[in-house]
Each structure stands twice: as C-alpha cells, then as structure tokens.
Amino acid sequence: LAKTTQPISMDSYEGQEVNITCSHNNIATNDYITWYQQFPSQGPRFIIQGYKTKVTNEVASLFIPADRKSSTLSLPRVSLSDTAVYYCLVGERPFGNEKLTFGTGTRLTIIP
Amino acid sequence: KAGVTQTPRYLIKTRGQQVTLSCSPISGHRSVSWYQQTPGQGLQFLFEYFSETQRNKGNFPGRFSGRQFSNSRSEMNVSTLELGDSALYLCASSLTSGFTYEQYFGPGTRLTVT
View 1 (cartoon, chains in turn brown, cyan):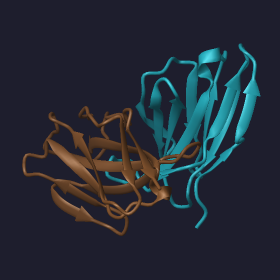
View 2 (view 1 turned 180 degrees about the vertical axis):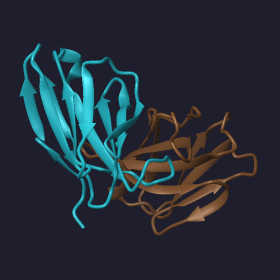
View 3 (view 1 turned 90 degrees about the horizontal axis):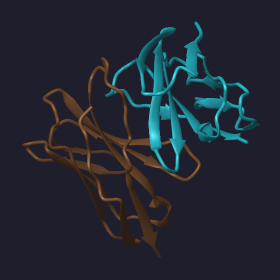
View 4 (view 1 turned 90 degrees about the vertical axis):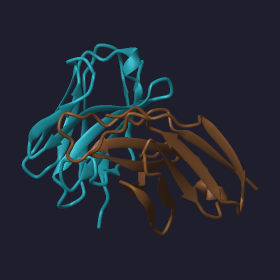
C-alpha cells in the first residue's frame, strides 16, 4: 500500500471551502485514492474515491493531478458538523495482499 | 437497509482473559474487515474475511484471530488479554473484497482491559 502524508491538523471557519492535500509519491499505476471521514467514537465513513483528474459527489470533490503523486479533498462551505478526522488512503483493486492502513489522518476543526 | 452492527458495544475484561467480539455486516455484503483503533497507534488493520476465508492479515500477534460464518457474520477473538489490547475495535463490511469497494463501518466495540 502506497504511503501517504497529510497535514496533522487544519482549522477553518464555517462557510469556507476547505482543501486537504495528501501526498503519495510512490503511488502505483493500479492504485486508487480514497478518502474517509471519522467522528469521535464512530467508525470511518467513506467520502469519495478517484483514480485521476476530478471526481465530485454530493459532499466533496477530489482533485488528482496528472502525475497522481498527490490529491486534494475539497469540502465546499464547511459547517461545524464537518469537524472530524479525514483519512487519505491509496491502494489497488483488488486487495490482493495489500493491507488497508489509515495513517494518522488530518484533524479538521471548524470554527464558528 | 440496516447498517453494520457490532456487539457488545462496551466490554471490560481483566488481563489474561479472552474475549469474543461479533460483527453483522450489511445484508448482501460478503467481505468483513476488522480494525483496532488506539490513540497512540491510530487505526490499524487486523484481518479481512471473504466467503469464510481469511484474505488478508495485519501485523498482529496470533492472540488475535477471527472467523466468518456462511451468513457473512464474523467474530474476532483475542486470547490472553493484555493491557495494551484496550482499544476501539471496528468492523467494516463491503460487497466484495477489494480496495475500491466502499467499506461501511460499524460503531465499534470499546474494550477495556484492566
């Protein structure tokens, strides 16, 4: 599983757009990029997944440059309820012998 | 449809005992994975089961084991509990085995070892 690097923490004000960048320099050709969100004392929740360029769903967008060595999760107009830890994962379909490792994640705090 | 359920939600055990945790996946999901989450180590993968077979295993000692039944329900067992086993144990299910398949997590079982 490709190693990922994310900022440990970020603060933002309500209503702003938040961008969290994940670095994955040794991403492999078959690897996909997935983001999860976790609230305290709950299991992680899938946010978005992509392979290249841009992916958008009802809660977030994922931007992946051409070299795929990094990715950016974009949360539009955040609210207090977006305060959580966000994990970036990189891995291959199918699992094979890969092991899903969440890393330390980014603790996002939304300020009123 | 119903989400992933885990029982019990909270558990207190003493060192040396063993414990069994249960996970019921979302209906139709055939893959179940287990994770351990602690403040110091974060979220670590324990193992994954698919169609009653262990497909992947993380770097945990043999005291941690699991199994999956024909209805996809899964159990994990920890024998000879140590203080360091105190953690939130999370179960996740997905339609099939594979990184790109969205995992749905349960609420977890909070295990405290005294």
